[in-house]
Image (tube, rainbow, N blue to C red; front, side, top):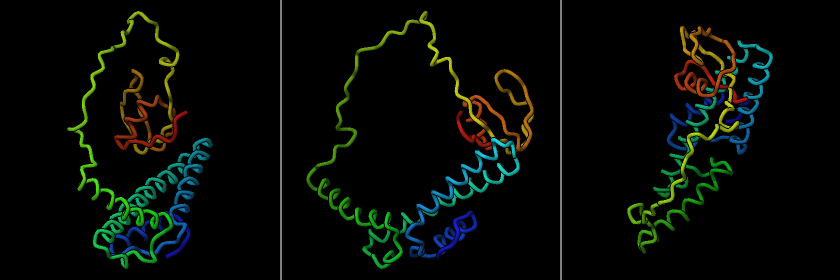
Length: 206
């Protein structure tokens, strides 16, 4: 299956991977092409953010989030199928449908399995319980009166795209209201909170 890389294309590949028992046929340059598509989307987001075009930046942001999610799920499905085919020695399940990267992975499994088997047989694996604990008695004293360095004073900031209205949020000691599609600059610690809660998207650190 071959087509222009976009969100719809990745969704169709994912559906085939979920539906089919065997690997779906994809172009040999699939992974390289998808990475380029995602990089292009990120560049478009930066451009539209700089131009304060929040609607277009938001559209590209949604495309990027959905595409990255589908891309990861495609990879996870394909790895699972490759591992299954290797464990059952059913090469025909993947024959002719492996990308160059997947071919290397598939072939490396044989050596990894052989090495692991040999280590189990001859005791070549050291578990955590067998590793001696080395205590470091040296403790660096901290001078509480030592002035804070400029490096510690400097705070990183990030550009944030707001996905939905946020009422009465506390930012840097002040209560503010944020509106959907706002693009603003916040300290990274606040940007991370908004991003993790799904209220917005941290675009880049500046």
